[in-house]
Length: 177
Image 1: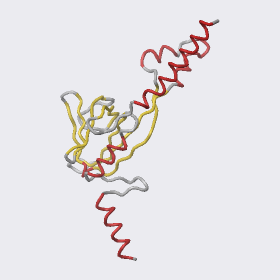
Image 2: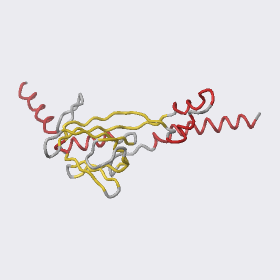
Image 3: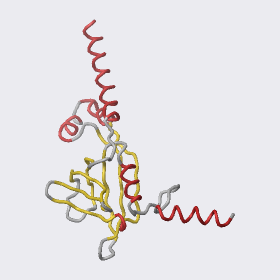
Image 4: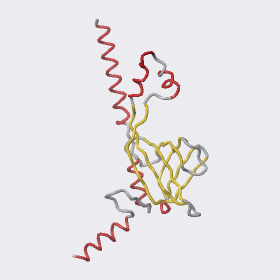
């Protein structure tokens, strides 16, 4: 009987640790951030894993030897969101669906939290493009703030479109008073 309670206690502790550790490992975007580029960048395959950073007015994505840059001034909209993805995927997740009486479907209930960053931008010819990235929790908002500070625009409610627009709006309010 003691063996069974010990097994249950170890299982519950492992489950709790598995849910808490990813949130504790959330990283800030002070340097390159490990991301997955789901779609949208020219010359980069979909679902490509790489690093993303903002420097010198550019959003810079690097995967191996290949890289892609988007000028912050060409970005028309930056949107962040919180999402989740399956914790157990791939072959094991697919094989678990074959468990009798739907027992494998319980694995689909375990999810990890992620941030998403969506960027809408224009290329050199004026064509409209969009790119979607997923990254660890707590990093998307930091990248968004860095992009806006370097000239990107955003249409999210409650935020200014550019730093210059924020100062001109406040100076207009002062002149009206």
